[in-house]
Amino acid sequence: MWGIKHIGTVALAAQVFYAGAAEWGTDYDAALAAAQEQGRPVLVDFTGSDWCYYCVQLKNNVLEHPKFEAWAAEKFVFLEVDVPENPAFDQDLLARNRELCSKYRVDSYPTLMVLDAHGRPLGALLGYEGNYTEVQRILAEGVQACELLAQAARLQGEQRLQAMIAAWRLIPEELQELNNELREQIMAIDTQDLSGLRAAAAAELHLQRTIAAEKAAPSDEAAMQVVEAALAQAVPANRCRLLELKYRLLVRSAETVDDVRAAAQVAEEMIDADLRLSPQVKESRKRQLRGVFANPQTTLNRARMIRRTRPRR
Image 1 (cartoon, helix red, strand yellow):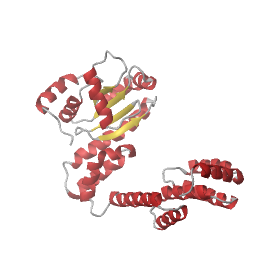
Image 2: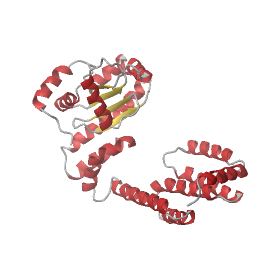
Image 3: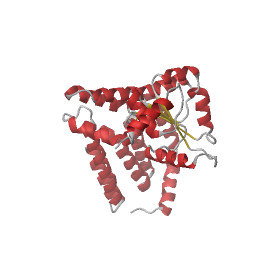
Image 4: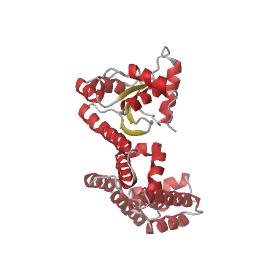
């Protein structure tokens, strides 16, 4: 999947091309070959060098900061994937860079990504961060994930599994879909589901089936029955999303102020069930929610207005 073409020739060229500190190459295959040769990951800068303000700021304030450069030069091979607007830019390179953006689902800039020598994205900084020490901290997790997977390749049995699980847990959530092959490898040997990936896959399947059944229900009442049945057996990872479905149904079908109050209560439960939120953020969102529902009659009137344009099933 992550093959390297003409590895012998490319690796030799890569050694020359990437010899200096913070020398940003532009050849993806050469970068992977150099990473393989040097035993280090690739740091990719997805940038719009002549139109993206924060890309320029990241380069000036972080990537070219002497302390960051000194740190990164010991850890990475460097690759720049530039998508400028300048018509004089090498159009063949631009086409290849756009393909890389598509391959790694990069649609916002700047993005820094840590790839291992197989091209697997194991760490990332999405957006701008001007503190170079914070950027180092974020990227270091990607480096650690690369090191753990390299160790796993040399291990057997339980030790190999533990190293792979530890690496997986360091991979940002937004990159996990790009590592489905790694997920499948872990699940294949993780018969006791120490990673929780089997349970997570089952939960996701249950959620998707519930969403499909809710959409296909002939009436709001039938849709509510589908959601309530799913909530009765929901795992914590699914509870927030299912409560969101219930909340929307309650608001859409509200006939009285009491119905609106019931919807508000479900919205609070939804906030409590969101595993991503800290207690402080949860309380803040609940205060905002109470402000939104301070006048239930106003909310009910809005629900009735929406029904006029979007009738019930």
